[in-house]
Length: 238
Image 1: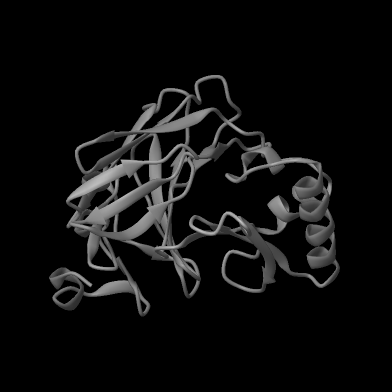
Image 2: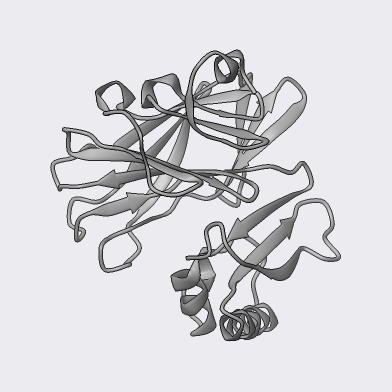
């Protein structure tokens, strides 16, 4: 945790994440502080459940943050076509960021990779994917969301996860259903082929039958087993 986590009153605190009552204080994760876009204009946090808060905003977009099983999700809710297309996430405590070919970004403090930001994604109110990508400016991640022609509101979701050897992606129930039907698989960042598609769909169907959600762990340093599948309950599984 950063020092601010012990000198302020937070809306949500876990072993690894502190979500503030005031968005301008930034979200603490593993010794880093993530500054949310436009946070100075946000109202105090409204707590939705044990791990999720939203920050109402008078502007054209608002922030929400959710503590997950392996990190946090920093959601941007884009309300209107007139909202900005660029959203800046400043990461205090990082020394440098590394963009990876699979669309992830590694956040470093010196030689240590602290967290990984999973590939950019955004969806509109009809659950259709909206084109989006990251770029790096020093220790700031800028997410560009091409939402002008989308059905609003649009939700963009940078997700920060732990792990020096892997990245774990937690799919919610809607995403698990799409994968069970054979769609949305192309957005998962690991080597693909017919056997991979078949195993993903089959496992997603198995998880659905148990009212669970799909979890995929991508192994960065074990090419003999680049990924493994599992399932989970609670957390983002809603």
